[in-house]
Image 1 (cartoon, rainbow, N blue to C red):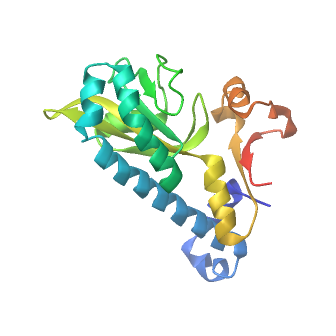
Image 2: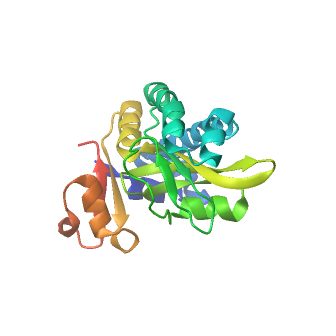
Length: 214
């Protein structure tokens, strides 16, 4: 089984080793992983471009009408899940509160502050933030973009794909099994255990298993 950490390291081989890397199955898988992730980021970004401009969602969000927003978003989310494997959809209030107004995938969970780096990036650039991050409900590939009204940023919208779905697609593409391991210094133990429904923190010294296809 190949870990994503190994694949990413292989993808960053110096240019002088490119000839050797071309014949290395790990390097080839790393390149496949990078291409697949970039394609998914672009897919999530394109969907967000459409959703953040849709008055069916912007109107209820501005009115802070959670029930109406959920009613409008739920059937669209079901379609996104079935056709695009999108598993997470957030509406987030603007800074400084950064409060989660609605999780379409988990509407009972709201009111908490979002402190992820992807949101930081979207706030800083007023454009897009993207990356793999742990949240309250999952470790996911996430893309965040501002919601605007009359040219002013009034909040943020996020779409995500659970990392397990992403690894499964990699396995279908290459035939290999994969695991995602994270540096323990970058992961909250209790938050990860809550998401995974189990605590496997002590299995490895410096890294913790996030998910795998095994």
